[in-house]
Image 1 (cartoon, helix red, strand yellow):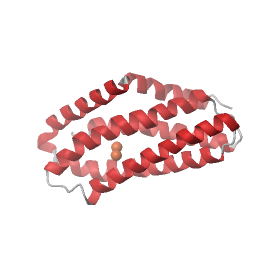
Image 2: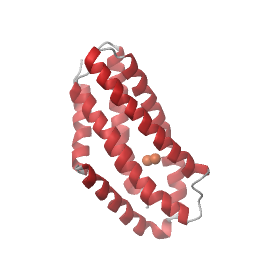
Image 3: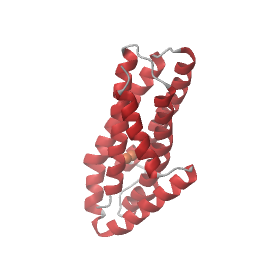
Length: 184
Ligand SMILES: [Fe+2]
Ligand SMILES: [Fe+2]
């Protein structure tokens, strides 16, 4: 299946969204959120999601869909590209909001940006899992081996450029879940 590796990324991203939802609740309850939660969140959202995962979609999946006749200047691919840009913008706001929060303990901006992020990315993943990836698996069935290879290649390239590994992000997510669950 040509979207398997991307669906696996989505599972990891969904775990982070759950940790962020729990973080929002803690902030609303007036709990202090340490740097050990905010910095890995930024590393994951800005590097794993924006650079690696979106890179795999934009440089391997979408071109294959385009080759199969799907337009990129309108329709679902166009929509997904706009949403990737928006995801990146909100992640940048989380960066600014985290900095402000760590300096002043004022959580309003951080809560607002985290909520926006969780909602936007949840909806984006849903559209890909249930719409675009379904279309891709049908359309690209005969080319799935080549697409898998391209996805692996882009992942490897992006992570190398970042100086990171997949296992770094898998451990980061485990740690993040653990650290969030231990705040009380
Ligand atoms: Fe996407
Ligand atoms: Fe995705």
